[in-house]
Length: 222
Image (cartoon, rainbow, N blue to C red):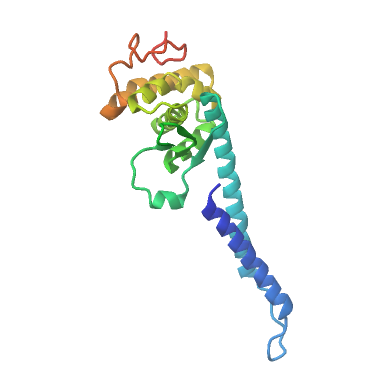
């Protein structure tokens, strides 16, 4: 849950309460004049508080949905966090998702997906499955890729290849039809994968290659 938004909601709500309490306990000024209720300032604070709460609820709902999908892909409970605006401001990395491993190579059951792909995943969930943008295709794959890391794969090229063979399943779990899911997986394989950095690509990631798991959802499956 976005800590910054939660804090803003609390501060705005407390500010509105403080204004009301101050007015209620000081309705008359030093000259005996009745003070007007601070309608504008109280209303503005309440709008900020309610708006922040709605954004927190929306973000929390998205993270729960993505966590459910990732848990299904991994086969055990895991958590997906979407990067907050504050985290984005101090982020210097170029990766789209992140899973931490301990000294023994075991993954934490939690992944952070950057703010932009999380926003693209939200748009995809809202009904863009039939005609996803390139960014949405990439975002679906990011979730699939990070799920492979959560499952214990540490080598980027191997996680990338395994993720591509599960992109269609990921898309279906996000609401796509079978045809839409398979089309998304093929789009990533044909249009995005060839442009990835060397550490993410492998000649063995091909039909019949050593990284081919012969899954029915593989983008090269007939």
